Length: 183
Image (cartoon, rainbow, N blue to C red; front, side):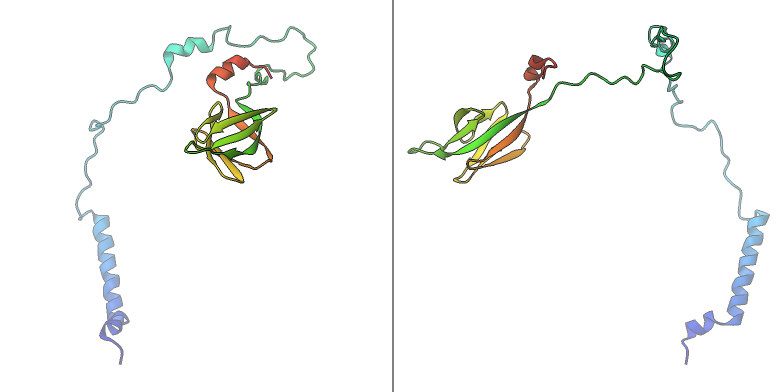
């Protein structure tokens, strides 16, 4: 035997009843018996009035003759579409400098901290763990096989024992002004 709920849903009388109810609801909606729509007013705005997005005070600078580039004096140009607008900018000075570093090992005597031996190009540098190697590059850790270097931005470099490695070091603002676009 079928359940009573399923039997009711499949009943022809139930379908006719639902169909008639839908037609009555459509009639009521079309006749407007359900009520009236709310009245909308244009003066009920609570937001601030829109401001002009164009800066009118600087508008005269847009059409000033000294802003626009001059047309080249030659009349027989190679192209009718000549423009000076897309000229490449001057190259920027480098912001990093590369150094060749070689980890030579470390030594420790008594209660003193580890002293690392690093070859920087052609010169040798002896610095303790935590000491400065180059501008903002510091020794973080030294083991028998590896040296870990870090900078304040937490970028680490790992140097293997007796193997050259090229390390990029960001230039400080004072070094950038001293370069002055050279190199």
